Image 1 (cartoon, one colour):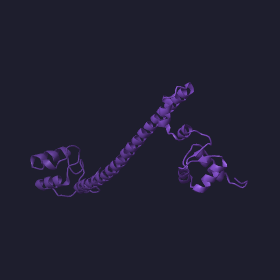
Image 2 (cartoon, helix red, strand yellow):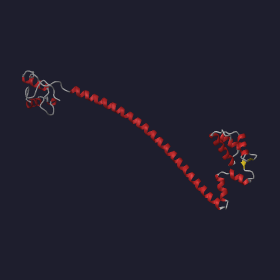
Image 3 (tube, helix red, strand yellow):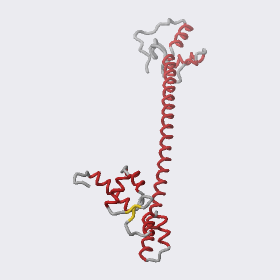
Image 4 (cartoon, helix red, strand yellow):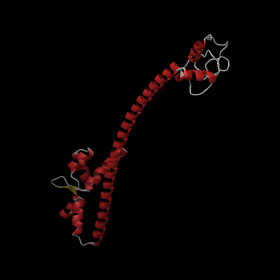
Length: 224
């Protein structure tokens, strides 16, 4: 490496060198790092590593077993360690098995979390669709309710009597007017309570009695 090498270049070379020392095939190193195969070979030669006919680097003088161990994956290492009586190897094998078990458990939990998150996302999406649908239905129901109230209110306003022409106690006696209305077929027009008697009942009573159908002056408006 030259003195002007960038940190990225140094990091890239360190990665290639680490893979060479792990006896990774130079072609695979080139594919993984985008380094040219020729550059990987030059770096191996500079570090004193030999390449066999398959492009696999190894330390000069390393036995075939050492080369195989350098290339072995975790499963193969555990298999070889199980057959080795060395106490240090057994301890390392136990640690590796524990690490593999922990890693497997972490992967399982990660997969479970992924499934839970996917399920929660589905529930949220369905709930949001339900909320939108129910909100639309509620708005429609409110609109129908408002229309119905408007119709009922209009009908009630249409049934309200106009200004009263006769005043109880001045133009008629309430008890006498109510008694006459009930006796002469006008009872259905009477309110259930109160002193006021409808003007049409008073008109009918006055007409039957031959009295003029005129009210006293300044008769009050229909009270609420």
